[in-house]
Length: 497
Ligand SMILES: [Fe+2]
Image 1 (cartoon, rainbow, N blue to C red):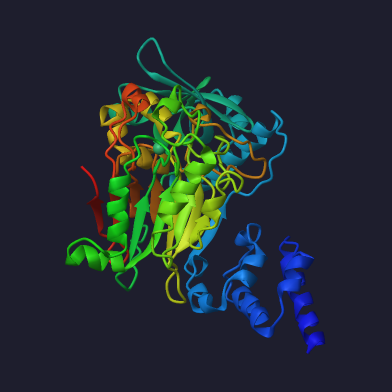
Image 2: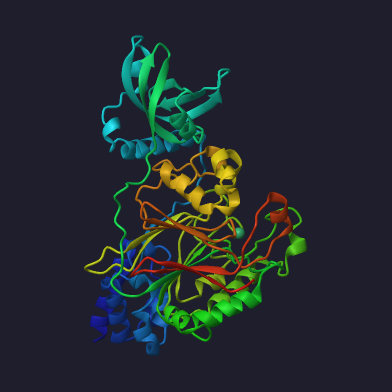
């Protein structure tokens, strides 16, 4: 019997080791019976602990959970939530040259998407057209390294690929093309079809990677709901505890009309898109607007609130710019040091910012892909892109999200956020078109459909701060967008004024 137990313990150690998790001897000592062993094997077999989750996994939790919770464990979040992308690179010293790899990777990733277009199948590299002087049709793909308006009012774009640079002229006498081109931002990757004359390409058409027009509107076969929160800002004196309390009552089925109660009963997933707490030192004189000045305590209070959400509902949580970790994107998962109480929530699935998760998949259904991005780059594009500003700016987060989807990048301009120059890939490229694209940051909820991707910007749980007053944000707190996964209908429930 003892021999059998030792053998099984060895097998467990091997399985964890393969995934880079060292099981401590203390933990092994705690495994005393067959029931604990089969519980671990069961979880490993059911892939509740897959490779992506392994690095954060604390094996001792499995052993310590009381046996009475055995049934509940089978419905833990990992069963229905698969983390398909969450940044986990170790922190390390970065070199300026890393940015070269980073931009080359971005170029290659978006070039691949652009080349799926018929018009860009036969592009040439820029060094091949530089020597040509005669007029000829040409198609090129490049990163925008400069954009200017000429004396005559035309647009002059400098495109760069790994082989060289070429100026592209967009004539103002082609109004539709010119209008589209006005939205071009630095560092994005575009395709241009035009005529090569002397040192210029005269653009006839410009292509963005965009999302396919024929994407399926996936639907689940049962009435289940996903709910989208963001920007709780716990710790701020402007946090709205009464509104959040109302939300908690509703989510627990204690308040609401019949229809609202039916929805709350069928909530399967809750996403939280960053800014769980207000943080410390995020903007000038923030301390005057903090009711809880200690960051550990802020997370403790946040966890105390989230604990009141029924535990069978997974909480998929990414950080935002107010959370206690680096600003550079991708931001890793919430810090275990600062936000320990959050990690003690049984139903929390921590992911990076940005992150991709797949929910609700089954043998017969591919599930829904959800892209989460807090939205730090949004400020830059509201400030820099006239068309976004003129159509509502901060009040139209859906247009900003559409703008980014069209570019297949979450922060196409280098100055739009702080980047960690990853040398293997550009993690902010939107490689796979999601079913849901969730953001926050703007503090005003809005939803829209763009080519069958549902765009959702979460609301907030904080009234207007002095800083927001200065920068022109118009928060609309205490709204909760909810998606019926069977019909893809969206409702925004209001829990405050
Ligand atoms: Fe926020």
